[in-house]
Image 1 (cartoon, rainbow, N blue to C red):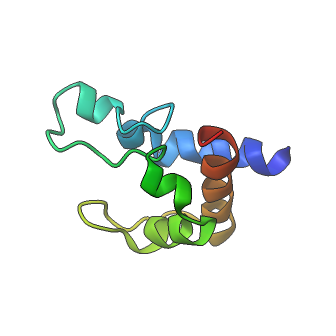
Image 2: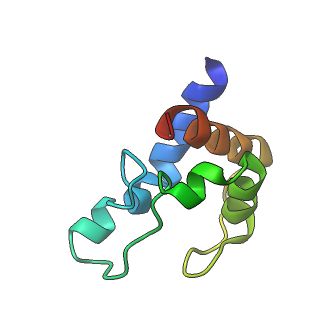
Image 3: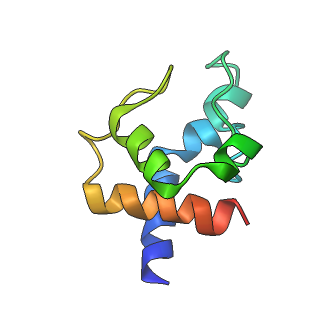
Length: 91
């Protein structure tokens, strides 16, 4: 429970603005029109099939238009975000 709570909190701080509260890619930067390219949906078939390690790696190193967040988020918090995505958003 502590892991999910910390993962949720870190997701809200670092991820939600782009990926949205449900992880569907409809965060406020996109829905407001400030960001014209839609962020990835974390609840797509592709992401449902991705293991936590892939999510951790993308948070760490970035992918495509998403910049790296490894310099901003501690490794244990990156794992907690990945687990929150898998255990809560992808239910």
